[in-house]
Amino acid sequence: MKLIIQIPCYNEAETLEIALNDLPKHIDGIDEIEYLIINDGSADNTVEVAKRWGVHYIVNLRRNKGLAYGFMAGIDACLRHGADIIVNTDADNQYVADDIELLVRPIIEGRSDIVIGARPIDETEHFSPLKKKLQHFGSWVVQKASNSDIPDAPSGFRAYSRDAAMRLNVTNDYTYTLETIVQAGRNKIAQTSVPIRTNGELRPSRLFNSMMGYVKKSMVTILRAYLMYQPLKTFSLLAIIPFIVGLGVIIRYLVYVSMGNSAGHVQSLILGCTLLIMGFISLMIALIGDLLAKNRKILEDIEYHTRKMDYDGVNNKDGYKKENNL
Image (cartoon, rainbow, N blue to C red; front, side):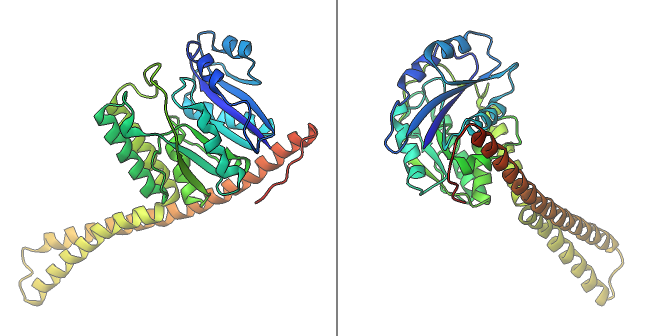
């Protein structure tokens, strides 16, 4: 069984070697461990540091394309190089590398396809009280949207089985962490969480410039992912409100008509009809969204099988053999 540990990098020359030095060289149940970095348009000597250290693979992006794009580029490269398990960690050595064994163990034992490291958020000293509360709130929202119990959704310390990695689809430009959990939960991919440790802060986070920016982008990402997989439920709930209110207003108007006192209440009829139309339109949007979601599921299945043939074809040419459990 082959494990590839990937590290997204953007100007990480000062911290990358520290993170690489801590990576495990052996894990029980793993036959081979290799290392890969994604150079996301770095302007410093990140690549030189990686080459000097002896990283096996380097994915070079000519310009900075963001964490989500870099993550998927790394996943693609890992699969093409025959990874059975892929671990993603950070170049700033935020996570304790010895805990990689905790991440891969449920996959090795066949208990899960995705394992996400849960940081001790409340005990992390460099997290402000506001950030701790927002981390918990964001994870709670993701739990509801994904129908999962992942306690630390923004954590980038995670492991994927080969099959789960081939099913990943990230559509936003911000981050992969939230969307992939919602996607896995809605597609019923086995995912779990394990408690992990963190190291002291070597540099400030580069994922967001301000706390409000982080909150806004995270909420938009979660909402967008949820709408992609649950449009019928979402828009149906939105349709109920104007429909019920509109129906109530019209019933009120009909009561006045039956009492022979309809004069002066035509506005109620107009308002009620408008609300009913709004509810009907929302319901039509829900049905169209549901059809698009079903079509998306078909396209994801096609993409999965296409990837499977592509990656397995590359590996077979290299003499790589693997048994797939679907």
